[in-house]
Length: 145
Image (cartoon, rainbow, N blue to C red; front, side, top):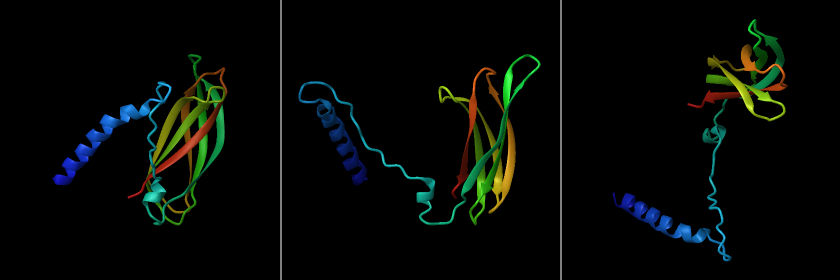
């Protein structure tokens, strides 16, 4: 209980002195920069084996619906190159505008268990505009427990 009280007191003290530290000598305000330490899921495993995924875009083709709207059919293969299976694997498809770099549309595939050495092929329909140029980006997430 005493540690919580000391931590709270330290937090209040820091909050009281930090605003005075954000002003430069000439009176201009400087942004407060607090470094944040992040840790990747692989680092949290501390050396334990984990799945590793390779992505390959097979095709990205533009199609039109009867109403004139445009969609893109994206096909990709994903391979677990590790010696351990991946559980709770989520593959995220991102249709990215070549000009702006913005994500136009996304889709996901879920695989409850992705075996070691397995290769799977997925096809997703993603909404886009017919007069734009897109690329497909893939991201694979998995449960580390």
